[in-house]
Length: 69
Image 1 (cartoon, rainbow, N blue to C red):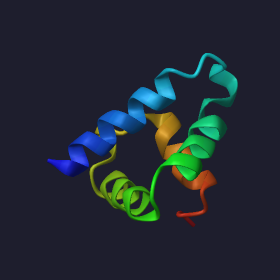
Image 2: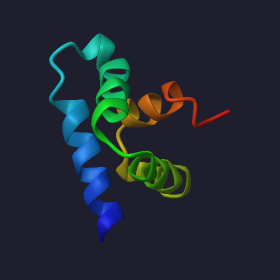
Image 3: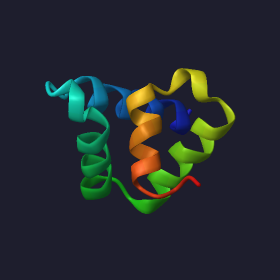
């Protein structure tokens, strides 16, 4: 249940950014500023396993946060 909520919140953050050209960078900045490392790690683990419910901008934001190779 918690992971589902993290996905919902991350997707909402990404979609609320008006500058679509920088949505991934601004989403990464938001996650870095307001989420705990544990929340980001949980979201990243879920995105790697069950990616389709995580938006492309969130996937890109997680990459920006250097959690992915």
